Length: 453
Image 1 (tube, rainbow, N blue to C red):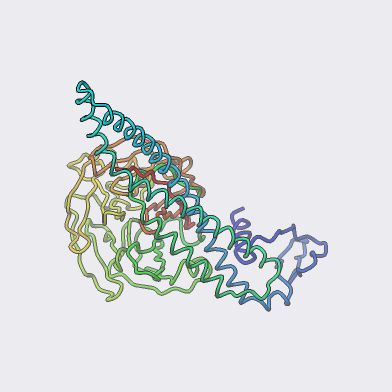
Image 2 (image 1 turned 90 degrees about the vertical axis):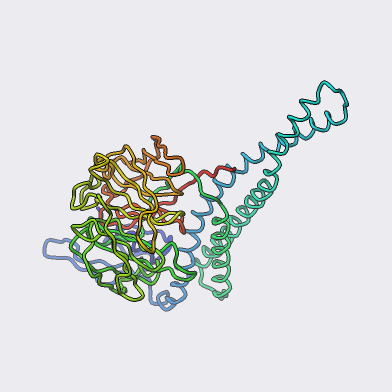
């Protein structure tokens, strides 16, 4: 079944949303041809390839451009929906505050117009409350503008999608450069709008988006959240031990559609799947040690290494799936973090913020959650989120906030499509979760609730 699903995914990627019918002994529908079909002695199908006629193949260059544009629009549409939900929810909250402000202002004027001495104390109280609420006025205007911007984004994305749909029907004389420019402009404006939204609390995780099927059951893949504009490289690490080679793909599209990559050899094998690429360097746990190494891709040299004192290693305090996952490095809006466990904390999770240049611990927090009972974990906006397992029905059920040094139990479903998570990390630039799920590289969009202060 998995091979059939992969075949369908390949056809969908190459041919957009064309309707496929079952390929059988009957004549293929008009516009398609069977290329190389054979049967063995027992009548079983050996190889059947359905391909467009040569007149269509001759336009492959334009078709490739359309595929790239359609992929961008689809990704943006998903991001817009998430952003729309967040903005509308926040806007409702602010509009309620606007009503309160207007009510207080009217009452304030009534008190000011009447000169009764017995309400002077009430007058002062209302005035103080007004001063507290006045800072919400510019916030209200900002969110009103964001809501309008989201509606404009949705309309423009819908227009571009319609244009692409028409082009699928008939490849005509469209100015592709103009279309590409519109998509790029929309994408830049969307990213700028998302960056304006402050940190928030995780309230939802989308259905998974399968980017690629490759590698073994365990591994990690990522992009650099601090990469400069235009740098969309993807980094890929297969396995959880006894490997030193990191693959570099030039873009997400290259990662999805080709096997063209540059290989980087690390000076030591890594341990687990908790590696991160951050600001041009990869941070990883050296195999069979509690040493963290910072390796600079531009110089191919170790720029810093440091032992994480008292941290368990070599499968002492791994995640519940095993795999030498004792030390998990991760990144969020606040910087670089390490998640591990110690004997001193009875095998429970310790969370440390690290200086990315020196690898020194800036501050540590001890939690009450056993490391071996955690399926996977990730950081968002200074809060550690932990899953209840790695296979079957999975959810995010524990959250520890470093801002308040408190924890809570939550219930956020996480669709575990391929039944074995061995890596789950948040990228603050993309505002998405990267996952390695049983040999599939997967993305999840997240919904954050933004609290206005």
